[in-house]
Image (cartoon, rainbow, N blue to C red; front, side):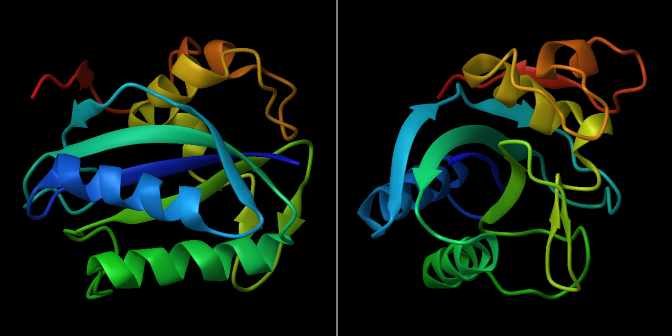
Length: 161
């Protein structure tokens, strides 16, 4: 199944944190990384009293079930050094499951599609790099259409190291 993940980091060596997360995903049984987006620099959303983020997206194929993939990405976050301190706070790495083919799922632990992705430029711009015509099962719109819809929050710029 095709799954799209959003990755972000704003603590420590942000680029190295993203690269480490992708490498850990590549090493995971049942997960194959197919595409990686370019890296974007973005200002924080929500709790804005923190440094800028680097964000990217990856597409993966997986044989894992949604909650098992969630457990996998949370384990990777922890290995890289994420500490959950406050919502929307600074983080070494954040990995979110954004889309999973046409799956719509709502549990206490996981919601697919990600409930906030439609309005976040830092998620949509990297996704457009790797899956411009992937459809949001909630609206039927493509990633490109969502990004250009006009109600997207935040500025994104390509990152150059």
